[in-house]
Length: 367
Image 1 (cartoon, rainbow, N blue to C red):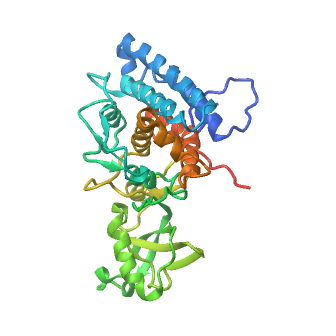
Image 2: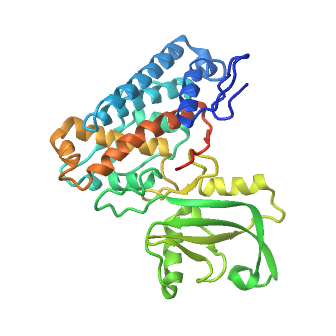
Image 3: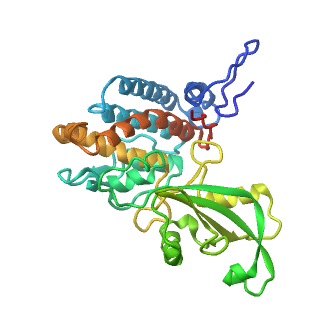
């Protein structure tokens, strides 16, 4: 019997137990050691196959090592484990030259505050090779740690002190088309009614007062490429709902590209704008960096963040450990949280990179 989340084959004759996402991902990674051999470039070269196996072994061991050290050292293990996982991906999926011997990145001034430290591409190295192998949007200019942090859904609700970059936003898409009257949509004023595709976004800030919502909405839509072409569903009052102080929802809609769209077509429409991330039906809008149409994939955004943290830990150890001082640093708890989150998130993203397909899990219940 094949697992719907990992493709792992459960031996016949054994009772199948419910497994959590962490276990499913671990099994999926182990299964990749054999299941990718016949359908990738691994079949073409014994050198690729040996490197693939050795690199994944090192990834597993670096992740285990990261579990037993504190946040003072953990980014080094996490980053170098991720590099080895990236080497396994290029061995499996990159035509031609698949090895690399440089990081392909450079951290700029490490003396400024952590959110303002920037990392930029430099030459061609591991970052560029793995970006290409996994189909990630590349980075052309410098990106701040604060912007990287806020672009990752796991970290947006635990912000670094002083970060001002736009955050990733929760996005719930409807799987069905709705009908809207022309009085609500100026671009379709000649039609009595028309089909629209709807979604709700949740924003972690104070809800704007009624008189400011039109201006707020225009600015909000402009910040996220995935919202291009959207307008409010209903009027300025109906479309907004406060969830709690500091969090509210906004209902948006787009004119349907064609009449009678089926569920699969609607899912595809929203996949382009706010892809499902890690869990079934969990979508996020992620802000781009600079002029790019979209940000790097979450895998490569974590790569940039962990490279930056590993450089701090290696070359500015006093600055890094001071930032982790829970009694003095306002960022300490957030940084510890990020290091813990990476232990859970990276194996899942690596599995998706190896499989070259999203592998959404069932989100565990919160008690």
